[in-house]
Length: 91
Image (cartoon, rainbow, N blue to C red):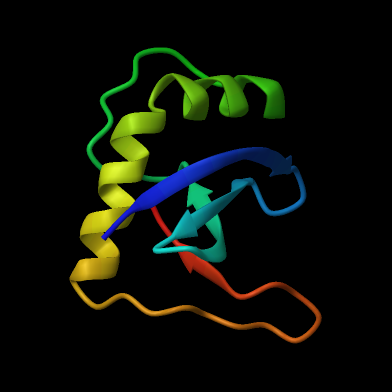
């Protein structure tokens, strides 16, 4: 299974998550990264803005790709909400 994050990402301030477009085995997917509990990441300090969260995500890009691969292999499926993209809740 191949998981590759694209360069298309952003921060939803209203809901406090980073969204990141990825490609999983040639299929596009939107990942949502919640930072209430950063799965496997030990980070000191505090993120004060969406830009801080985006920078943190980029810094741990390879780790996040591995987490996505593991969760998909473990059977996590896509979640749908009306009017939104299907997404995988990653962290």
